[in-house]
Length: 155
Image (spheres, rainbow, N blue to C red):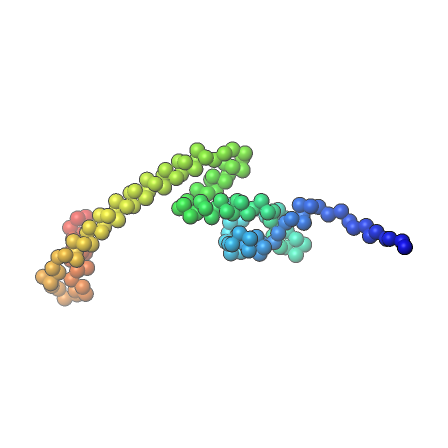
């Protein structure tokens, strides 16, 4: 019995691991449209394209996409994330930049909380006032009309 071996051409192992954008979307749980947008912004890069023009991505994009999703969940903008990733791509640890960005976010949140607390108090005052005394031809709602009058007084 003679065994014949079929010689297969050598393949590039990295090329075998590349995935199309649809597969990257499934594995990262992100829409293809979002991945295209991230590529356009430079947050991710395709390795190459097939002869048919399909983008091919390295599995190394998955941890990067996970980082982007986590950073977005923390309130970072895509511009801030891009800046952090650029530092990383230059071979540096972006932890100092991340700390500063997160501290800036905390400051923004504290400012917004103060603004919302003031707004809440203002709205509560409006609800507690008797708006029946406001008269006028074009009055739609005395409570809001009163607020408009109050806001012009404060300007």
